Every structure is written in C-alpha cells, then in structure tokens.
Image (cartoon, rainbow, N blue to C red):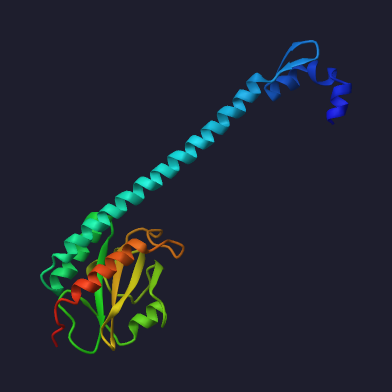
Length: 210
C-alpha cells in the first residue's frame, strides 16, 4: 500500500474529503501536512497518561488514608479496659472510621463468652473459613448472625480468624459492609487482618470468665 501511494500520490492529495476525515491538509503539490493529526494523537496520549496518573494518585491517597485510620483504630483498641469495651470500640471504629455497618468479635463455645462478644457453636469458625482458612471476604449469607440488629443491612463481610483463646476455643473478627462490593473475594485483607490482630492481642490481657 505504501509503494502504491508513492506511485499514485494524487489518490490521497486530491481527495479533500478523505484528507479532512483523516485530519490532514494538502499544502502543496505532493505535500500533506500531518501536524494536526500528530498533535491530536499527542494530545490523546497526554490525556491517557494524565488520567492514569490521576487514578494512581487517587488510589495512593485512599490507601494512605485507610492506613492512617487503621493506625488510629489500633491505638483506640489498645486503650480498651475490658473485653466488652474492646468489642464496643471495634464496632464504633468500623462505623466511624471505615464507613462500615458494624464489626464484631466472636468466640466459640463451650465456656463463657465476654459481654458484647458473639457466641459461636464449636467448630463454627472452621465451617465459615475452612479448616486451615485464615480469612473470607465476600457477600453476606443467611445464618451468619454476627451483627445483631444491623444484620439485615450487611451486604458483604470480611471474616478473620483469631488465635485460640484456649487450645479448643477459636475466635473470629467480623466486619460488615452495607455495599455488595464492600468486600470481595479478590480484595486484599491486610488492613482488616491487622485490626483483627490488634483485637486478638488486646483481648489476651483479661481472662475469660465462665
């Protein structure tokens, strides 16, 4: 095609309609000005690069804000006075700092369950996460029953396994979002897992009373 156009330049330079559609302009015999088309392509490249940079910057700002809120939450949780206060602070932080519907700490039976914590049947954590599973993110499902009166508002959840309080009593940290895409299976869980670790370590300060 290149060789044919070189041999028959009039096909291009004499077709004004085609030149206009291509964004080109004939300025002389066998001369076609490509400046406008080249500039248009350059502007498109700059616009794409600017858009990509803005998206990266927006993600970076969101990540930084989330990390900051997570660190502030950790400090707040570590000031808890008992198990009940810890559960209350966790729920309040989830709502105020992360825009979630609720958060809860749960502990498997048998044995006493601290006030404000959810009681789980033995083996329930393995049922939810798998025997070796550490976390699960995705849509909420019937029968989870971890968020009390706000359960019907929760559309997606993040469930994080916590270390056993005793050899046979596994605990769970749960976060509930009001958005169906709030937690998804392909999403990273580093921040909520970090909060769960803080809850886990803080809860070790006090004994579980039967």
